[in-house]
Image 1 (cartoon, rainbow, N blue to C red):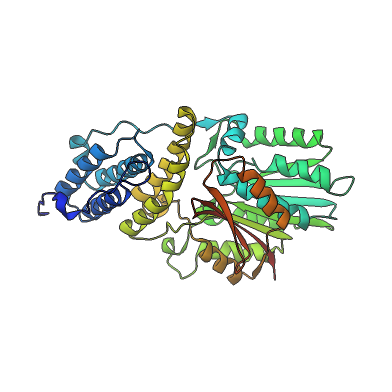
Image 2 (cartoon, rainbow, N blue to C red; image 1 turned 120 degrees about the horizontal axis):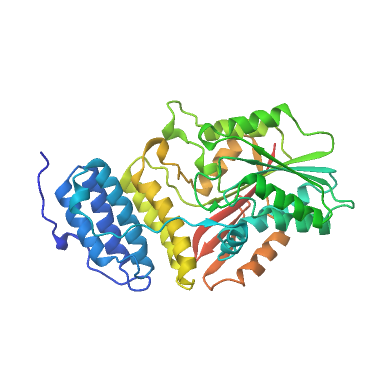
Length: 410
């Protein structure tokens, strides 16, 4: 039987207001103590800390309080899964906001709210345009979290800048990307029809293909199809990886020393693509230990909560519901159910180099376009170039947020 302990407030640091009034250090320590209590099956201490957190972190408070409330909800979910009796004694949290299902127009506007995705769109599109110049056919495999929201801008740019007549554009997507937010309210068949019609207005012939394939097995069906139907003469194969490879299982989910991420990248290299773009969030959420994972999550996810303070209430609710979904997955889930397994820029660069890809510097034109885009958004957004690994990094108040890298086979 677990020994009951009484929560002693003096064991935690004195509150010092940070980031809009919420005390980040104090709340982080409480969350970490709660995570330890949950994994130690200490129901009494877990209950006490959850109660304290609920009283100091309202879900409608400042950005730090909203972040803490989201992690609190995830910890409660984890605690109840381990100790079901807690659900009858802890009923103070309101239900979580439902994840919104966007129309295409809504999603396009939603993506434009911050540079989070637009940053990667701009960097990748500039690299793609340079790589495919002179080809009669361009085949883009779009492994993107945002349901092809990058593609209309790329089509526009292709119509303006590439050879006349412009190349045939083949766009291939996988059908598993509706497993995590953002969600859309139309099928990929309908989405493809809209994109083909849009391309027609730009005098570009486009083919749209959906391949049933899933991240859980490293997109093996997609890779198989690409091997069966290799690129034809004067066709450029482009693989655009925008915040999707994080869902491929990594080493901690396999019994071998390699992972499906390694297998995927090596098989991708064997296809000899013209270019691969890799855009990801720069944080490590793969730790097997809950405490380390929660610490990483707290020190990264304050960024999206901090950026939403100027949003309209509905926009903020939609945005933060998505972030809360990620936090719930990182904190409350384990095994194959924990799909949010983001890795740092350094680790992804190691993986790409091990798979025999070489980095390509992001074009100066893209850097200029990113700078112009950032001027449209709130003060606090910035950008830095990492010369040692040729990457471009989006920052918020000096903290790394998202990185963009470009790769070619070597």
